[in-house]
Image 1 (cartoon, rainbow, N blue to C red):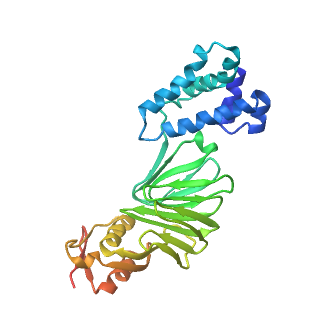
Image 2: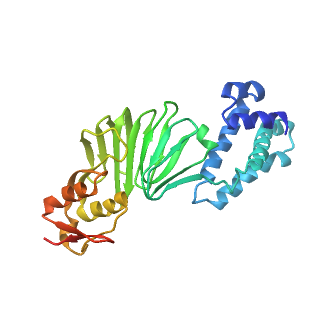
Image 3: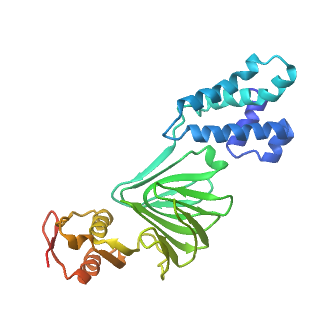
Length: 295
């Protein structure tokens, strides 16, 4: 491996700082590398645009066609970086690392020592190389985050995104419900229609369309707070939390009514009573399932 490629590899892995890299290759070259990283990050998305990729690779091939020496010098870092990226497996076949929790909590320590605790039936993915430059991950489901201070940390989901610098927070994203609870520090929540900043002890939910202030217990998965969430959605979430089969007649309009309250996700019976009491519902347990009885 050439000396420049070795230095670039160390930079990509976080072992060489921007200043050290600039000393070796110059400011303009470092900026060229960052352009490549941004392009690669966009090309890694599931909805890859083949035309856009072709144009990008055509740009990388330009040094071979350039005639003027000055242009060769300017574009050479792109070609060198491209060859290195190819060796590292970062081109079109770039794959994100994915973690999935099935029936129990799973903790993942990220490269910067930030921690993600996935709740059951949830997953997240991120790119280990690009993470050093942009702390971004994609979440499906629910997770608790403890973020080390540093550059912006961004959690993306289908329903919205959360941006922080260093804090602890929980994201709930399932079946059209997007809820963010802040346990320390401050976080910014973005959806298609709303942008909110919430502080310690506050939470934001797209069902309530506003910030709520609650005493949040500083412990992962110890509580679930719902604000005017359809009863059938709450029961479905209990299915997920406790890995049980709760059966009910979802054609009954009663299950469309909103539930507001906090449940203890460490105690199934207590949670069932909290959820069903306002609707005067009862339930019975069988060996295979829990059946909600009509009132």
